Length: 263
Picture (cartoon, one colour):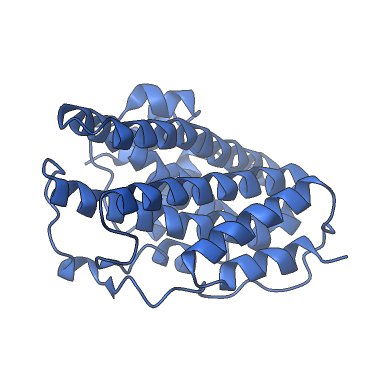
């Protein structure tokens, strides 16, 4: 029987987006059916597989995409979101494969379920791009999204602090405005997709917060102050308001975590 780590590694090394989505979903189904052994016997790759397109650019070379009012702007916005979700597949699977041996089995259950959600989100966004006459890979994309995984590869609490509790939590802050903008433009199809992603993001942030607090309790560390120290060390951006306090609170991420670091 194949190990779950071997299956996860295959997902991470898959380059083509549609193949990665299909393989990710298959691994989650196999895990849930008990068809993968709960064994962590292979290392995760330092870098995941990437397709030839999109061209990956550093942040300072990314073209400005506007606010999505025109169809061209919406395509640029959807492409940027699709790229975030594509990288998020790897972030979730890497979380399960790299750190699963250090946590209870439920940790792997949770992060593989997050990976399945991210694969579904990517597929929805790519389908919407195609309906608008474009597709994932047609525009340049941000090259730095994997950096947070690279710098936290040695520490599961640092990874949990930065990826779900900072980066994905930021999605809770900005997505409602993006949904409203799409509706004002008459693009209900895009608004429904983003609404679905928003709902799932609350759950993902909640999973990250819950496992971060579990790890802190195991290590007898104060959660909020340790989170703040990790964010200062491993997150290169700033925590900038406005914050969606109610959605963050629903995920267990209270202002006592991020309030002291807000700029």
